[in-house]
Image (cartoon, rainbow, N blue to C red; front, side, top):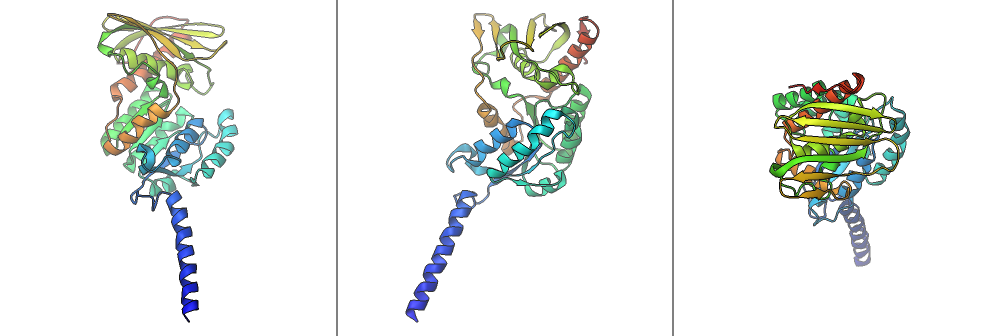
Length: 326
């Protein structure tokens, strides 16, 4: 009888130990009983994998350790060829990191506390963001926030109406050396970035958004006009700010791709450093989820959209100066 009880005890202990190990890996019994659950909309961009890997493999004592990406809705654009090609591969990668794939945004919202909107197609962002905002789940919208000032404005208006925190940014806002600068001393800047285009988007909403984000992180809102000069392989954008400052963006479409720039301050000239990946951006997103306070003012994000819309108009008008939407 004692032998039977001992056997049952050992089997029970083994089963519990196995369960403990599995759940510890899922951060249930690892010291975070109230794990903060994140969902992803859109598995057609590499950022989705980078964010998931950083969070779901973080040690328990790491700042990311109390979060976990638990579910994802893969779409994402169903029309852009690059997105269609990426979705199956990225879906498989996030599944390997413990993420469940769901069939709708509504299903996703039932499972999570916060949302990364990672869909590569800015044309879909307003429609997808509204579903999250109405559910009042704090929302990070990856670049671009939309494909027009009008859509971006509607996102922020809905966020106010429903009391839902929204934050949108490119990771290049946090390129080495930029955040350390005193923006009140910046008198001008010349930045550059890759600027491959996509027919479904205004030029700078696709990849050039990274350079625009850098420019406004340095100069702030207040740009009153922009002029676009375009030749084969290069687009050059010159903005004039209301206080008389001038800044430029070189969009690289041929030749070596890189990010960087020169910043002119009252007392020195600074050369921006290297792009350091998505960690610096993620370091801003996760605290935002908890506090509901965006590190980037919506006025600046809307100013970025106004700049891009005006730059597109200038391109279509042969390089004429275009005033930004107020």
